[in-house]
Length: 523
Image (cartoon, rainbow, N blue to C red; front, top):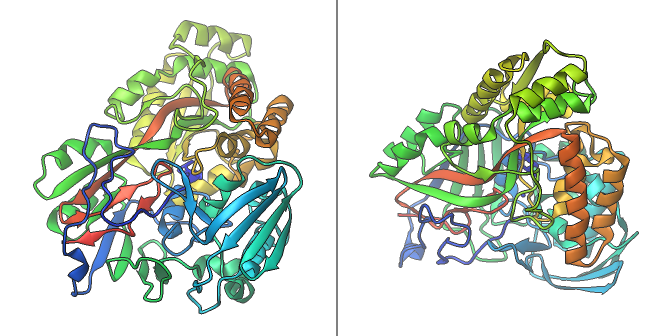
């Protein structure tokens, strides 16, 4: 997922209670500690309050397009056949074991003690119904492209299911471990159809209770959960757009977690007696995108010119306070397929002006840069507005509420835009197919509307190749083309940052960007 999307956007896991969260730490801050002894004895009702900047725009796994939305349901309401640990290893979840029988056949053995929140037993038929739904053209899921290679889901018996593929597909497990791989109640699929976003029904440790759009989403403890039960009775995802208000809520105890944490508030949190600063390395990147189907961004020379005119080091230092690291492509260093050999565009205003002249814009032009209402992204847009003025480009900054911004981005309404991609799976295919393949235009993730036949071919070759080292070489070639064609300007590799009350233990954020709350205790 994120593009903070993720979409746009990243697969997470549920660790056993008591585990110290250190695996993804940047080393700059200590992650939140393990649960205290005796925490399991708490008896008073506990409501976990999470203050978030923006509401989810969808809770249907087959339509979710942002990490913001996926984080509400992933490993909370919904679960997949497998999960990933904090170090991104695959572990059992609804499947107890699996094996690849040949290049195109995978077998999964399923848990036998699981029920959906509506009482429906979890069986192989639920897996078949879920995959069938995402691939159903009448449903129209933008995530269907991730499952197109599945030719058949074969029910062997109630607790053994077999996937037959059209062709070898190396990232299969990474997709099944991601939110798109969430298994949905067959009864809910039939009952709610496309309205499933308002009625999520999974097998997870939390049950969906209510959603008041623009205000809050409430989940409650699943008393009949098949695994280890959560330590809180409810969790409320409260929409609090104002950055300082979210932090103040944690300071006063009105909220337990504030996310995202603006980089401008890091020092405040560090100096607070009531709050811990949480930081961990993420899989995603942040970038400036060009709508390549619109003039003048259909001209590669214009895109290259702007790439030379944007000083990313200044943005990382001045806007992001050195949170995150400089990106050389749309793929971050922890993702399979990343290439450290890539060199982007050095800051060179003279070269930028020369390219604009070649493209027929010696005096620049007027355009608009779109962004959601997150403070750092607005600040980034304003810095870019100032930087591009130096080469004669007059930029208007257009700020939209986050959900409206995502819709505008998906629908191709933008010109330039500030965005990100969370890469929920840690696999290069999730980055490449979603962001750059011609079959992913718009809601599929390719919001630059970039089309390149050779890149398409390499992406398709990369997902079929079984050898990890050969896959890295394939993605390196695709990344080289993408950098030269410049459908986007990479800015930074993401870092997860949150403010957490000192009375909260067991919280962590997965490398994919999902908030993990199943092991939380409140002192």
